[in-house]
Image 1 (cartoon, rainbow over the protein chains, first blue to last red):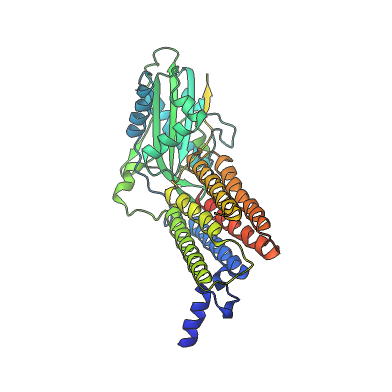
Image 2: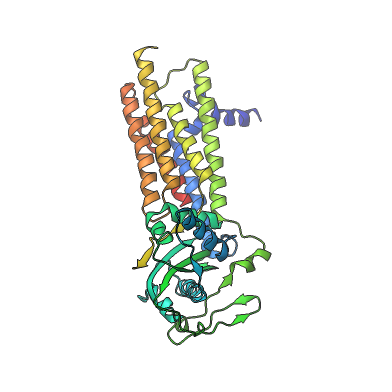
Length: 308
Length: 84
């Protein structure tokens, strides 16, 4: 028992047994810590790949809220509010469906299809058009704030040429991961949109599936597993991989900062002189990393795109 | 306060100031490919270079110390990369 206690003590407390430096701060231990963290990340990636339903993202984003926040940003700059257009909503939904069906995260599909084809597909004849994409955000505020912090997305968001907007928030499986896609389309119609309805959309209870059209890329592949964001509200929330990563990072950072503090205070108390890295510098760096880990929010964007 | 102590204090202040700029860039830059990655590499690279400079100033730079700074900087970078 005593041996075990001494062994643990050696990990944290500098003494003659560990060359007056806490064992956890020795180079091999640091390498081991980096290695273990990499292993945790690899394991997480494997689980995400093998069991996408277990680890994933669950969002509380609604298209209405995205439109509301977008209009708030525009109003704060004295710009006119954008009107929701059903055709643009449908085009956005089809774009998201296409991304899930062909498993891509880009403005253009792997088959070379441009975003503007979705506008045409639903009969929206535009003078100006734009597209913003986002994925894996948890809140609508997070999405709009990320767009506003990105000059190119902001340009789309506050462009005075646009008059109408369409938004789709769709959850599905993308690149092996349960993902929330947000597609925001902007447009200014050439004239009053043709009275045609956007091509058939069938709704099957419990699941939202997009019907095929003659031009649609969807007909070439299997129907994507698409589910509206609201359907997820009654399910048990999947564990976010980001939360697990954050927890692991906070634990390791807390451990290292603690060991550095103990090591420093004991060395200073016993007046031990050592040829090692500066503990206060390491602590400063790790605390800054800890702050970043705590404040970081998920989500990623693609550069925005516009046809002006 | 003697000269050595004031140099140390200034060195710490510069370190923390630049680290804070780096972390602000990491948090505030849009999550567009390349931007956050650049902030991470800048942040960790700065820490490593600062560490080498500081230890050299203290006349206590050797390979083990340099490796210690490198490992801490790499560890920080890996943590941040794992978030994005």
